[in-house]
Length: 365
Image (cartoon, rainbow, N blue to C red; front, side, top):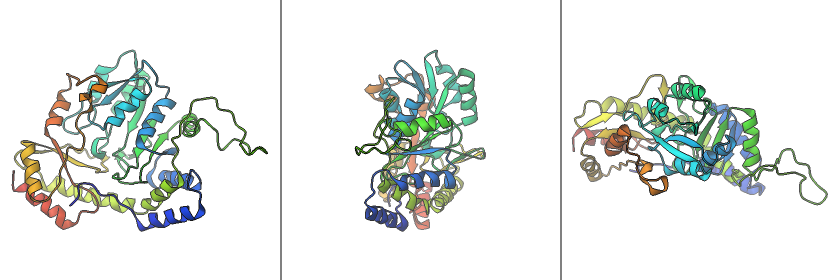
């Protein structure tokens, strides 16, 4: 039994073969098709396909105008890329506390961390469970801040009837190998404002307007570069993988939700185990199924004895010296850090696998 599963559909293999046969393997028509499909099938607004989730975070910060001396409020319960992307712009990540019952950033603590230098809020949808986006959006409006969602875990999640990827100024996704939808490696940034969308398209490939530049008799297109850009574009091979895998995404997501719902039902009222909070106004994408346990090491060893993997996946990132050391005033984060654990929830699990996991946990540790 594996903790993660990389889902590759037969159609993805066919699409990659077709892309190779055309010999057009850099950014081309498949990338545009993939962007259109993300919008049509998953409700993402203006997705710009990129070569990783980290470049999506960085590009969003660039387009948002975040720079040296600015502060961006983030949770510590995330992967290190969230904080490093902020530092890549010379800005400072400011760590806000989380709700220990969700793993998501606390709107109340966001308010406490706002200073005259704050320019953006970067909520992370831990495990695929959406943050309190209406509250966060209201804080942003009150203080004229930009919201950049780190939705690396949350493709397919919904919040109050809206798809994650349609709510905030920017939303960043990851299509890395173990995500719900993989392109091998890749990402996307959604830009609600058409001006930001245009800027993101320019900057993802060296600041060159590929669509608007004219062919030249000399063999190079005629263009001007007026802004710093990057080599962040997705290629057609990656897009072909993503397009093919989209065919099975809905079924895979439904399977994850079915397993997650079963865990919610059958892991209740177990001594030493506390399920996280799940509100009815949002749907998790269940990239992880995280809960809180007492005697975590004993719990992990009990599952290992039955061949069942478990993992914290990520501990708080503010402990790294690159961010200046651990933030002292995050009680929710401290509790979550000491008690969180996740069990497998992916679509490759059989009913028998799920039975075994539940039975093992219910027998105690």
